[in-house]
Image (cartoon, rainbow, N blue to C red; front, side):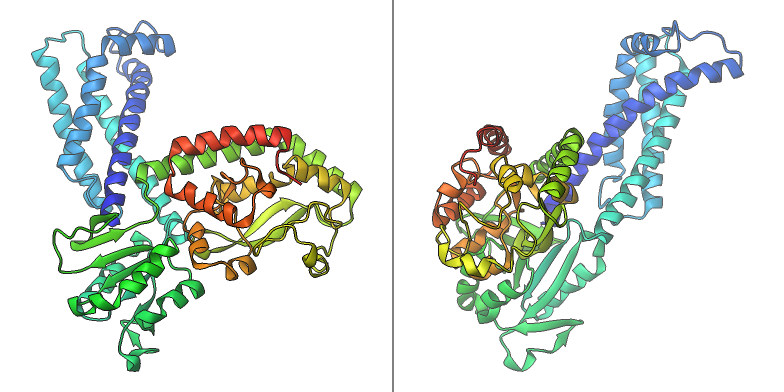
Length: 485
């Protein structure tokens, strides 16, 4: 849980540092023009001109300095623990670590220059390069810290925990979570088997019920993880609760005094030194989720820019075809039941929701979803938008905000979720998307149960390559309007 995120953050920091040092190398080169002019130091070796061609020529002849600097900086930053506990460490300690790493790197590069007899290498450049790198690294780390703090305060990347247990070990766990708010964990409630404790508060957190109440609580609270910090005597009581969490795709963590336990689909992890066994129905590495989110941002932002003229054309078409707003807003259920506002171009007449009850007997889709091929509420231009899937374009804003992904199960209505069977709720364990297997496999020609099965197949077999294939197939489906009405 925390450990995996810290490893991913460390790798990300190392990559950013390598880029920062590379940028520092070129900044130092261009600054040397003014430094040498100010102190009348004359020309610098391998610098025929202070422009990009000159910079590339200089880099070719000092490549060993650049590569050595990147390697030494990252090595010494790791050695002086700059990457350790980055989000919770004092920033002054980070600055001190960067200073120590800078001194060590300068000495190491100086040794290389001396041992390899690089007589033409500018010692002044090496010193300036180390100084500039240190300054840029401090600025970069400061901006990154501010960005991470902003994300936490904005509610992004936070997770809601339900803690099962109220004993000393559970209280220690709660205390750790409270001490480190920057981890982004929010405890929504506690579980205890003592009926008299239900409704009481322990360490400021309310006891919501007994273990048998967990399935009900999963439906009434937004819960991302259930953490069992229980004594060994409770093992026989939590089996059904674990099954309920697995069925709905909610992550499970067990803190137990057990070792070398052989359980299917289980991963050993730790939380601030507390050993945990992690059960997950959706498995992905942190770097894969990072790439998926980066793809979402790039694709949605690019799509919004490229389709801006189309937005204007559609807006005019809607206004000329039907009275009412251009954008239709509707509350949908996202990751683990989070509510958000979904945006679409309006394709129905105003008041369409009120007329839905009159048409429910004509529903052509089994299950809680309502689909009607010749829906009389859809105006002609709206029918064109639906056939071409252009009505979905505003959802790129949902993707950019982080409520949705480009690829993922379609976000259901809250009323639909209430009618889901237990096994169907697991589709909420992944962030909803604009397109998924269902969209590229016939959409409205696929019955509801098969639709749900497709979403679970996507969750169980997820990979970045699968996302790319679905995106490619989506272009074909949209182009020919396959399965849309």
